[in-house]
Length: 418
Image (cartoon, rainbow, N blue to C red; front, top):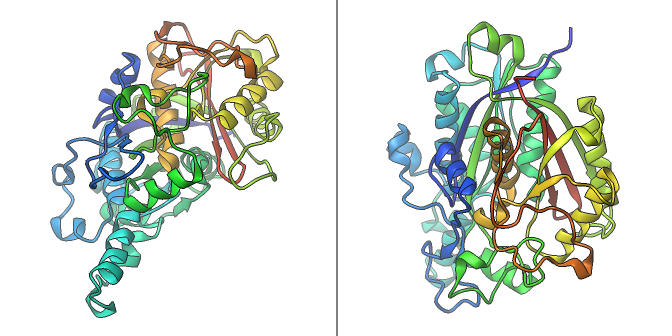
């Protein structure tokens, strides 16, 4: 019998809210979470803005203080979103481990805050190796979010980490889907996390020419997907967790079902370490694979949550992908929630999957803010839901992630009421 996979729990900490509900209501209202950097002194940096998680307090989630001291920020954020999602799914620390449960986490950069601190002490303060924290490397490596979540919940199933740049969160959810379909798990805590707003990361991405740099005095206007006046993405942090569950398993325990994950597709551009294929053909392979996996046609998708980074390379390549998959004159409703959250890198795909699920549940497509002058000169002439959201019944929706190195991941969600 086919094992179908549903979403029964949601959790998030993001630049637009410290819960999944708060984050969704913010993007629904077109509220930006971009502001001045406070996590370090950026006064001498060319780029002084980012999408920070505000007012975050890990202590409220019941994580022991002695454990928190050994966690980088990306791990803390993931544990917070996971505690929310597990609770939302009506599991507890005591009963979750009695099921065939595991973890799939997406993370690109890991604990750059821990590594920045170690470099500063080693080189700037010249304290030598003997004074470095012995947990610098365990705090830094990207798998530590999944590892700490498994320790906190006592889960001895798979605890895997996907590191596929900006597609990491999407691919982690796709991995969770496949693990449940294969019967290896009945429940999978899946999502993404990132917290690398540090001097080295901001400086490096500025040197790459990837970041918006002329909106320091007007940060809410900085993320401008599909707009001709864009100049790069806004770096951000956060985490989002979805509880995935085999459908019959969820029904037997009376769980709320937010959505069914109907399909997943992945591909590689095999082209360039940072730029996507301009014609979008690599991403189109993954999008078509997700549709085929879901057993539906492109015209059944009512809403697409775009990767929409606010760079010319992404905006053009992604639009060309959409035209290739959905047709050059498609009326598909599209929006980029990164216009409000900024780019959460390894967590982006997970957060945007959550927004896609909530859009389906509420029958509401969130807007792309700051889209004042669509870049039609570069063929960006689709319906990107500029400025104001739209009420619409959504039977099927798709979210997509296009990462550095040409990693592409797409998820198809089905309305559970169909």
